[in-house]
Image (cartoon, rainbow, N blue to C red; front, top):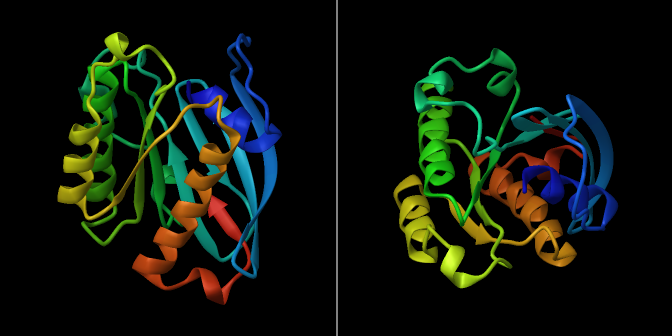
Length: 191
């Protein structure tokens, strides 16, 4: 789901089957209002990191539900997930309660690593196109969680280009809301 979401954002197409990659890098220009943001997306095994540009930064970190084997493995985050990053898009599968729990743990670790400063976050429940009976995380659970974080919640399907594009627009808007910084720069660094 994470790689499909990233591919839909960058290429505008949904890839049903793909080979897992160690690391792939993509670039994408995003326009928000009158400003353009050059984003660089790095899709790595287990994580998607977005980076590139200059000035403003934000990030997409999406744990793959199958990795790691325990939430404790998120206890130490690489400095690159925190330094120079102004926001995060956290993605979980609505068909996996475990991935939802991992995202909660990840957000808490990021918050602690950043010194408990304000942190723009967009939480994304992905795979809403799958049958309702396969759903393990209800919409209300995501909404309730971001309410406690003071963040934004969206549900998506990597099959829907417009919704996927909206996720990245929303994180730029969140950075502006929290940091009031995107209007001062036209570069965007997504980690």
